[in-house]
Length: 373
Image (cartoon, rainbow, N blue to C red):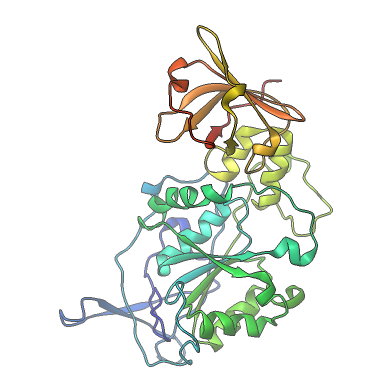
């Protein structure tokens, strides 16, 4: 783990899920503190100088098959302290101060993003650093998110069992405020303005103006500013050879990505989407007019315009074995049909609709089964 203000914290054992590639190695020495300190000190020893140092660490990639939370070991916390070797944050400490931030574009919150959060949780308090307003600044066409904004906290909470029972939090930065920063200026902002103690990033991570910085530059700059840096290998898609993804995309080396999730949704392959996400895809829609609700003796049917959707749906088609969730109620089995203008739902449970619909709007959640061919 890392302690803020130049202090260093590390776990001795990252577990089999994070076996070392041999590029960097960590060793530790534990010393018991008095009870008033309530901690165990672990100094990371530099093999060359015998000075306490924190080494950036490369950890191996993981397959698409996610392990259960119980398979991921979490060793007891240990601490390392030394004198501050960089300036304190120049402004009031941010909510992410003292934390370990995962760096990336967290659109889909897929299993690759979860792996970053897992590694961050092994080093300290995990955060995801997200940029706000990137599409508007860069002139990209607007597109619906993979995960509805109001659903992101639920997804991150579901990661807690993988992250030492700590749900990662998101910290948002306006993209305009960092767009023109050089790699060095960006890392300086993390260290001095935000008070970050360490970063976790993927091996293909690029940062700074015009993506001038890479992972090795990130490690060097973090060391300069007294922060730890963990670089992890990409989580690879085990189905990559069987799928015709965008071969013109030089960034696509077969790793799990938000682009792959979007492409799988466009194909209507919900089983594949679930594997990439590590969970079923959940579509949220706001219902403002319940007059479209119809019923028979055994079913309830309703339709809603696509404009009511809060995130990206799968391709048009008919989906069986879906789950419909409304408020705190238990999931109800349903069938979903999507066309160019509407989404149609049919429920088997008549009691699902025995509720008070007097509110002007309600949010429904749909978790998808497989597309019927």
